[in-house]
Image 1 (tube, rainbow, N blue to C red):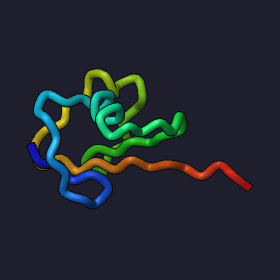
Image 2 (cartoon, rainbow, N blue to C red; image 1 turned 90 degrees about the vertical axis):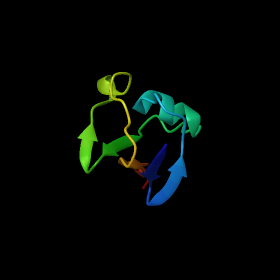
Image 3 (cartoon, helix red, strand yellow; image 1 turned 180 degrees about the vertical axis):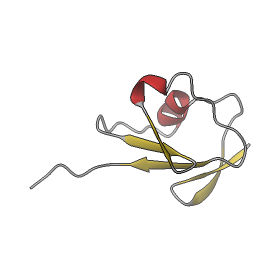
Length: 66
């Protein structure tokens, strides 16, 4: 299925959750923030939030440096 991830059209397998998507794209930032269709997704919902074709997802990597 096709989604938009960080502004780029991506093809991913079906039956994906946010947690699986994070793993699929090898995102390892422990401070990662995820938005799904312009809404914040709480980390405790990553395993139960399924992605649908056409969803818009943003992976936000906050910079906590000085």
